[in-house]
Image (tube, rainbow, N blue to C red):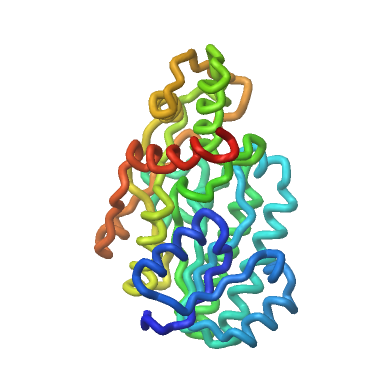
Length: 310
């Protein structure tokens, strides 16, 4: 990307989009276009059409999405499939119409079949049934991947799709009703320590294993791939390392200083038993993660500790 290129980040206020914004600024890019959702509703076809016609971005990072944890995905199923498909349909199509040089679409590891072999390889897509609890979100993301692929085949668009693993970092969502597991645990253990509670109840059995990537590492990978990757196939972004939710809870308890008991509520769903990304393709492209998990959690906990939740 030329340093003077006009770059649009869809979803710049979210965890992923804000990390991409910081990474671009750090590299000296200065012509970055952003819009708050109150200024541009990406679900509104006419509004998105007008925006692209007026701004004519050279590059697009499509990080805007409706996201949430197991509970939110399972309860707000219609919202998750409708809103995500509307956002990506409008942005991808208008990127084609307005001659965007390159678009990077951010998917999710939940696109892979529930019973897919581990670690998850890119070619496992559409080889089995999805995890029911987040199926609508996953189907929307799969549609986005196939849309990028189809616009590449029919129109020759340089649209690429990347599949991040579970993410955490600045601007994460700490709402216990719809956040992901890592920020939810961070808030739970932090508040338990402040209130002097003797135990923390955590959903599930603690046995599922998950991989976590810091948002700043994801942003670095996205910039790297935007400049160095133009293949038709999707590419995983992760660390290639995982740990159990039990191990994660114990790590977060240690970082937050909680010394009480961890109680597992096995009546609540575990979700997929394991989701580890095969990052061999990414490594062959020349990119590796830099932030290890404990270091990364400590990086996000310090500002969180002083936030409105403290």
